[in-house]
Image (cartoon, rainbow, N blue to C red; front, side, top):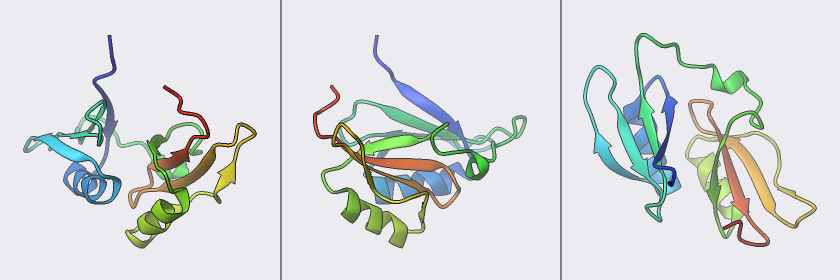
Length: 128
């Protein structure tokens, strides 16, 4: 088996999907209407999807109050600093500085404009 998607409940799936497509290189592959406004977004390699939706019967978690190490969505990049600057200019906020792990991986944690944690990762050695 392989992972098809990871779901995130958000307050405004339409706006979040648009921002992720525009600034994180994701592609909207399916979009639905009211009441959930479910959007499926594929990564650049068409390997994994993220589902964004709103369900009035379930509260949206306060992602902003969660430590980013508890839950985050990580994106591989060849230039952490450049991508970090682009996301900050697009409304993301920093959640720490760029760091280098003992394995030599370069990482940066940010929050999207709605508070969900997004990590940028440049791996010294590919993970898979």
